[in-house]
Length: 432
Image 1 (cartoon, helix red, strand yellow):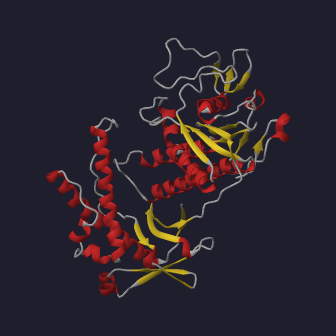
Image 2 (spheres, one colour):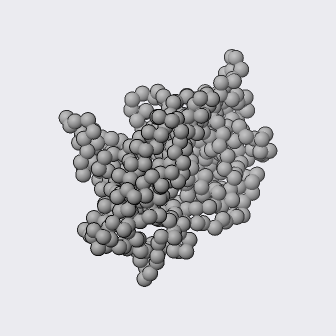
Image 3 (cartoon, helix red, strand yellow):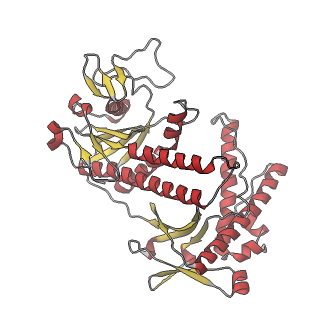
């Protein structure tokens, strides 16, 4: 499997000019390839071949301005995007997806695009990575290479690809490297159910008698501040207005989002490793953000929280440690009572007149049939386990009211953790 690490570059003026130039040339070459591929599609209804663009643009000045393997990677990315479009178009014609796909569009004129260097093009010497430049650059500027430092936590031998990412006025080096698989000491019959949300970003309940909540209120607050500042800066400006302050603000917010995703995923996986949990069941409804109606304010908050990205990051870590990751639909899990063993229908196939025995009385609190109060999100996470109970042959006897009443709350950006007093000694440590 492969990992990915981004490093913020702090180039001097000369290196910044080189990075801007190659990313600009990659952007122009991408638009050239997109134009040709679009014409083939519109006139012949055919998708461009993987190597056809390289043959067509081999003598193009933008192709020659880049190192040959980099130019090839750029054009192959265009061909792959059209191949993906073809697959989506076939799925639309068969009724598998509802939104009609559009052919890939052009990059913004005058913009910058990702530049990808394969491992074979790179050289490592004295702690620096050498990047070669194209033939025209050597002729015009008498410059044949540039260097960036190698991160101390990575081994150059494991690098598979290195990308230069231009983003909001900054440049990142993205290292793609191979990761050896680690078979952790876990038991597949020990399962963690995860219910994603907003204030409670991830509510987790296991069948080994543990429960905790990854807090999402700080992340929501960061999004609210970002939206407020953007609205203030754009007030009275023309549509599409953008400046350096907006770029800096957006980049800072994006870094915070990436940090939150990595921290939350690591909290979940570390908990599984500590408790020898070998299976994670993630409740997820496809397209659950499409057309959602929670009110203007809640819509904005919910849609901007990157739960999909977090789900995929947890999946990657599970693959690395040999933990089974299962995604299941979560219909009726919030309404049904876990303690009363309510029937859990599949979305769209619920029996007529179905009613839960309990009720969510207000945010965060669920009342069971017997009048007992438990955490509403913990109830949902436990019901997610019930969705796959028979399929996986799970034993849920340890998922009791004690662990559904007040789960521990874990915060992303500090070590503070709130526990239930009477169960503090029974909970395993959850570390970031």
